[in-house]
Length: 394
Length: 74
Image (tube, rainbow over all chains, first blue to last red; front, top):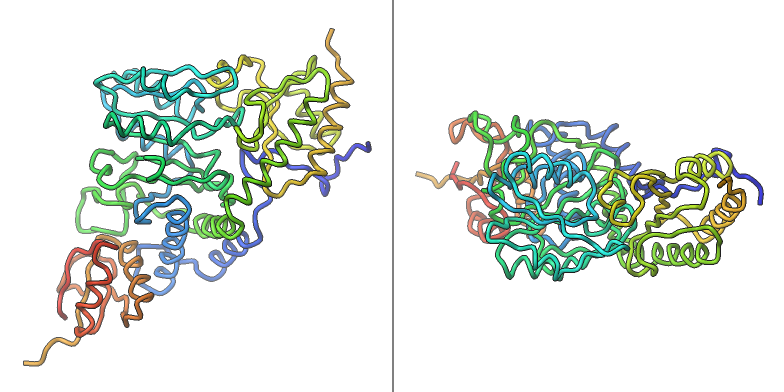
């Protein structure tokens, strides 16, 4: 095997952080916005402003189609899933409230929750199995009279473990509190339907499996819930300009200031790509790559794989370790010797690493994407074999 | 006195107005997005203008699909 470090032959396995490459249509849409549209959406009434507004509305509409949302105006755009989760958590929870979460969460959930804890919000972190699975019955057991919210990631950014979202949604419905899902890793990669899964708040990232640019994300808010959800920011919305109080309706309540219109133009094109290819087809390809990789890893010595053993129970994310090689050393070697781009460390999710027993060493994470192929996976397996053989463990 | 030739729908925001536009376009109802006339509201946004004889048809199409604040005859 020849080392493959050239810039033209990179293998991009960091799709769980941000997807690359993007569909051609996404780049075209952003060029078109930048070069031709230009206007400030929702502000002026001139044709370019209206065209800008129409582009953003279309992005809302295709997202609503993708997630089974009846009214696209129930989606507020944010700069990422983190901002969406912060709106949901900081906006909803008050002193005396109880919130349930899992032991597999990202810091985009845990940090706001740990802050809220200092403000008198009670938190139950329900333990997961060693491969990251949350048992819905354990969630049921954690419910208290003060429980206001269950917040969980649809799939882990560390192990890819997919949680039984619909089952948990129905437990939440049964008990009459609220359900917030962090879909950063799954929006576009797995089927999501807010009604079938009984989701009240859906936070998503635009730049991962929805193929938008960085700086895009959003929050779906179930009808009526905006009355109980304080915005993080207030300011100009282009609406109700005669009043000095923040609008109380969707989506303006949560969309202060000029939006990332060029980014949302790109996101719209990314979502149209997902709809055209089909989530099922995307899932099938990514699951195939993951299965190939898991099978290959199983035949190598000195490799520890985390998360569920089967590709069907996870997104296209695989965390592993090579005996005697630290994750950061391995990632550097993958990049410099093989041109493979991945992410080592704790992945902003110390809780998840504690659950799978890799805190504070961390793991090497490969995040496959729709544009990867079998040859790249095979090449990576050879590279891992080579690194494992070159173990420097004393 | 002649009947006013146009009716305008006022919306909470431009996002609402643009969603309404999409619905009317799909229904084949002739409309125009215009700045909100100053004598109707101090809001600086846009509103949807339709011919007065299409007002009921437009209202039916928008009902339950997008919230509007007021309908005013021009």
